[in-house]
Length: 135
Image (tube, rainbow, N blue to C red; front, side):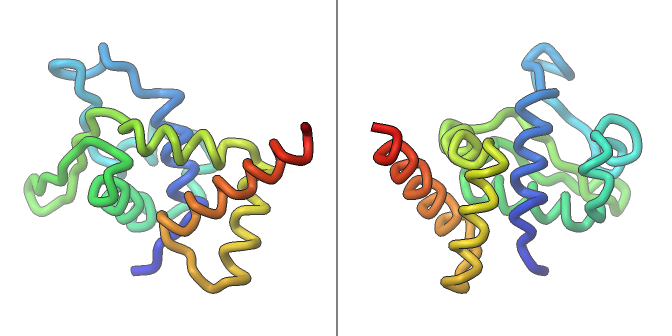
């Protein structure tokens, strides 16, 4: 399955906005992404397939952007997401601005490498250039 960078960013933005440590059992946000897609997630995430969102969450957990785990309940994949890690917050901070995100995606697509690591590296360089230009 192909990684969808826009979905990654949008899921992180949604989690940051909606995840509270007081939610769920022992402060854990738990549930199926399909349920979130149909009830809690904002319109811009409903544009993604459940497969895209599930795969994005899987990749973010495996890449260290999220603390969480996959569970299979009655044949359906569920993800228990505890929180966004410091690495996930760092990535999100770099790509939060729509302008920075568009520049980051444009540069990454030109070099033909759209991985989480490359996107984070490019986003950091975009921000460094903005800082340099504003001084």
